[in-house]
Length: 215
Image (cartoon, rainbow, N blue to C red; front, side, top):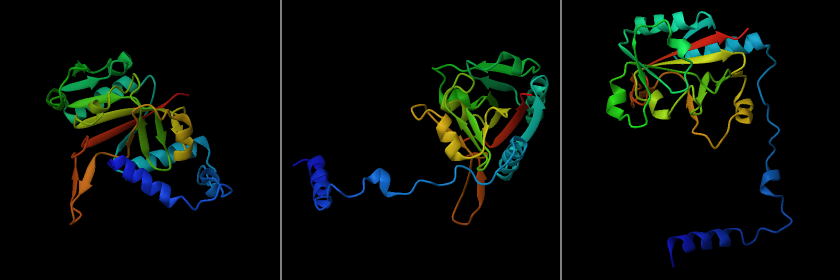
């Protein structure tokens, strides 16, 4: 008997006394939970996003579409970056004002090569206000997951209000579960048993979020 047969046999014995007229699993649990906590205007939702991002130690900036290239150039200069990684589908205009060396993302790039890049600029799929979370799904403006995990400095652009949702349930309705989803709440951080915080272990040490007004 294989391990598979053994496990399936145990499952069959465990559910042998379940009658066919029992409540189906999908109906057994009340799923009428709140889709968001409280009623907020669009402006209040964006403010909550900014507050929670900052609470997670992300650096939050605001601008409009015209001011985005200058702001990104300033962030790269302020960080002391000598190179910046750009996904294949990134809007070239976002980096039009910077003189920092631009490194295109290549499939054959090794982790060691990516580690030599100072910064990465991406867009996002969504931003969740109640949790201060950015969601990336590998779209053209975001690129592969590895390019946002290896460089030490990540600048993420969020279009406001189009890419901002209030809650996780609202986000799940708009996300494609078959895509490679990365959920980011602040810069990478961990702590040991003595609660000493160490940043940059599992991803970027510095996360800068740019809220770009679409209006």
